[in-house]
Each structure stands twice: as structure tokens, then as C-alpha cells.
Image 1 (spheres, one colour):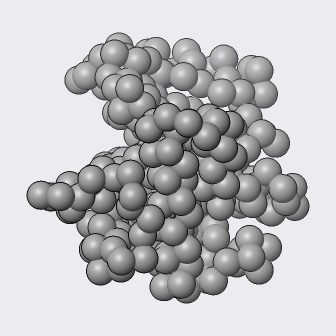
Image 2 (cartoon, one colour):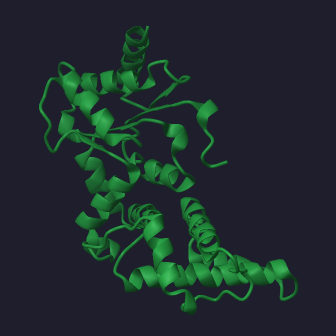
Length: 267
């Protein structure tokens, strides 16, 4: 059944100029298998093969999907096909286009645990008048790190947040706490810059800004990858979704698979 559905979908895609395809199905229904078959068909179709090196695959489980694709193609592991996560793509893009992005090409992202350790080590520098650290400072600072990550997933910067908090007025405990959180957000990002590093949210945010503001960079990336495959589309954040739209805006050559019943991460 998967083979028949995919064959019909591919026929329609070719007939209409290779436009986007969306595969929706529940767990265990063969969505990832469909993407693997789609990759093989694109790479080897008679008359106009895309070539494995010109297909970008975005997935939360890069290593596992890469192995399945290479097993299907019957080729040994190599630099290509390009199977990676959103963060991996963004890190590579910022490294290759460091001058255009205005970032250090050797800046490496750090984990939430590393950032929590950073805040604990420099806790005396943090504005914490309205955040109660008594008893368990690690839990409070850990929740702050998590909140920053969720905001960056929505493309909210520390400047954006501070601007919003400033509209809450001068009175009330909530307003004071939100303004202080804006200061904490700014201090967190400043400490990352001082250390010459980024967090994972910065990777997507900076890559999105680069592709939005530099059409020639976007054109270069589109020229490198003729088609994009996305697995577990429901797990993409708002920021990743906008980045994906920019990535395929010039061609529209994308195949995505997902299960809307599993769309729980943004909630």
C-alpha cells in the first residue's frame, strides 16, 4: 500500500512540477519508510535523477534514518547523503556562512545542563530580587533556562521579551517578575557571548535571520539541495517551521511526513 500511494503521489508531483508532498499517518503506518522510498526514487529516477548529494533530510533521528537510506541505496557510509537535525543544518550553515551571519565560525552550542552550570557559577551577577532561590537554586535556574529555550523556539529574543515586559506597567508582583526575567534572559545571552558560544535556540534563530535577510545565501543553499525531506514534521518548533519555509521558498521541492496526533511538544 505504501508503495502504491507513494508511486501515485510521485506521479502527481512530477506532473505538477515537483511541488510539495505531505504524508500524514499514525505511529507505525510507514511514514518513515515512505520517506526512504521517496529518497531512493528522487536519487535514481530515470531521466532526471536528483542525486543523493542534492537531497537534504531533516529528522530528529539522523543516524537511524541515515542508516536506513544507505541500506536502501546499497551504498556505504560517506559524507552524503545529508541527513541531519535542524540544529545540525543550522550549525553547518552558520559555519559555512560565518562572515555573512556575523558569527564566530568556531562557536559551538552548549547544552541546557552546561548553561545551568554557567548560571550557577556566576549567580552573583544575576538579577534575582523577584525570584526565590531559597532551598533549590538549581531548580529555579533550570526552569529559567527551559523558559529561554521555549521562547527562542518561538523566535523571541531577549530584546523582544524586554520590550514586552516594559509594557506591563510599574506596579504589581507579576510585572516586576517579568521585567526581571527579561534582565535574566539578557544576562544569559551575554554570558554565552562572553564565552564565545551559543545555545541550540541561537542556531535556529541566527540561521533564520541569515536566510531571511540574505537572499543570495538562501539561493546558494537552494542550489546545493534540490529537494528537502522532513521526518516527524509535527515536532518542528515555530522557528524551525519558518526556517523550513525559507529553505524551500525558491523551489517548493519538499516532502514531509508527520502525525498530527503526536503534535505535543509545542503544547
